[in-house]
Image (cartoon, rainbow, N blue to C red; front, side):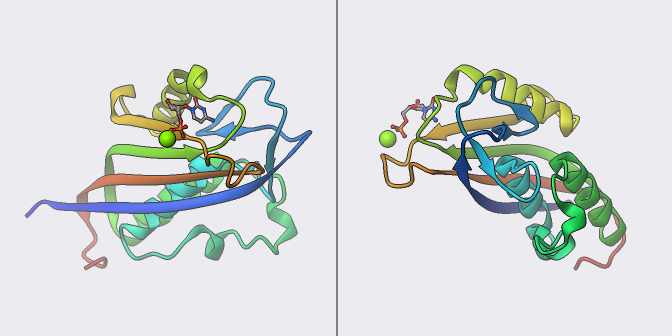
Length: 166
Ligand code: C5P
Ligand code: MG
């Protein structure tokens, strides 16, 4: 029988000046603010990692990359994603991502002009067709002007199960 899973993840960081704003592996050019984070602060990739893990009940990235560990400072989130994907393969077997849908909540700067690049970069990172990655943007309507937040759902198909994930 076809084993299909849905995953959901969320992440948020404070915004500060002088940090890059990286979303889905794409650095927003000339953003006046970026995520204040232990790693590169890519909330979209962090939410995606939690979405992938959640689909199999494998916890969240804080368990694998504790913020308290100084070795992970400045870590590229694509390394986190690769580690998560390796862990899922070890625990579950071969898993194919069918599609990814994300929402980024950010008051400023405007992300719409960068949507195509963000989607294309994320699709490349995941080896997906660009049409299988959608990213939408919302403001917080001024409720969280100093935060960037992402929520991601992912649809997954287990290709070759190890039989350990239920
Ligand atoms: O959140 P709200 O409904 O006010 O967003 C209105 C529009 O602004 C949406 O089309 C969204 O894509 C865009 N937007 C954007 N960059 C943001 C937040 C929202 O381009 N940082
Ligand atoms: Mg609105």
